[in-house]
Picture 1 (tube, rainbow, N blue to C red):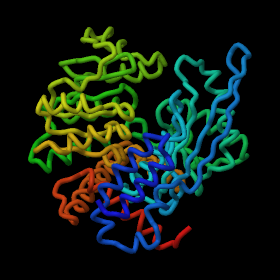
Picture 2: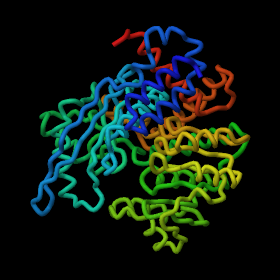
Picture 3: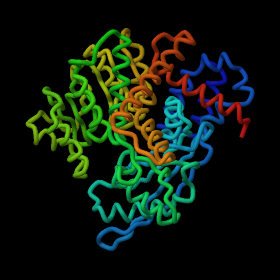
Picture 4: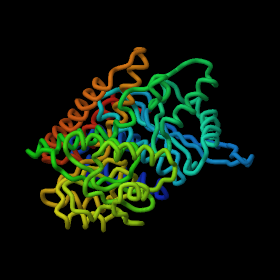
Length: 449
């Protein structure tokens, strides 16, 4: 490992040791950048890496809201504006009980690199709150969103910072947030949030975009290996918008998703989540706010495995698409034991570093990183921003084709970046290198600050 890279990693561990997710993603990314740093000693001269691993700014604010019984609650809100070298900060808002500063920072760092991969002018940011929307009424969520935006609105804008949805923040929450922003600002800046409804500036395919993009990226990997997606079986996790999009696009292309998961366990559907009835049931599960995947098993008579994850299933492709650190080393060993060739990360950092290293060591296994695979969501968000600025709406087919083209370009740029440094078909290193070089070039051009 390059000595400068090693020093920066050790410094991050010392400063951020209580934020394991942030430390983990910094270590994974910087380790793969060693050959680039070797080739560019000027980066060390200006201490580029130390600047790149610290956010430009991050703030915390309290969010006070009233429940349906007249009781007041106080949650914490966060926004991390990590890097704006190539454009306004761009990244989602996550409402989930486990949200803390370390999770927000790791997501914002990853978002910076992911946005760079799209080729569009967007910096990286992330935000959210430790508010859990599960079981809350519409009125409670409305009051929370209004309070959250009242604290946040001063620091965002179409040319400053453009939040979007993430876990716990769907079209409903985006609508509530935008309504409050509009009231506070007194004007119609519809480019300030993405993921909006079609009636007020949204884009076609946005709810499905991350899942669609993941399947398009997978298709590029399969084509590289001389294979077809048709007939392939996929083990996916989660049952939210991302997994829903994967199921929809996989079925369209002739593959089938055979597992879904939730906090309560996972279901195995050997026939696949392929029919319109099954695919349409996933949004029903999401909107119920019950957060139980067993509802699918009860509806369609499938096997349900409580408190388990689907990584022991014999399939063609594994696509972890739920949350961070979902695949531990024991799960990775089960995946390898089943001779699965394609491991396609979809969720942000779904694999622990030791599990990821183990999978990448396996001869013949292809590992694709989430920062590339799940870039479809922010890609369509950028399309939404473009449509808002031009006051027009592209058709579903136009957006879908543009998304497909971007995902193919992300795959090819990752391949080319890895090849440039003699790393073969290493998609993890390739994505890290391609995105790093774009951000680094912008930072070097603008001078140290």
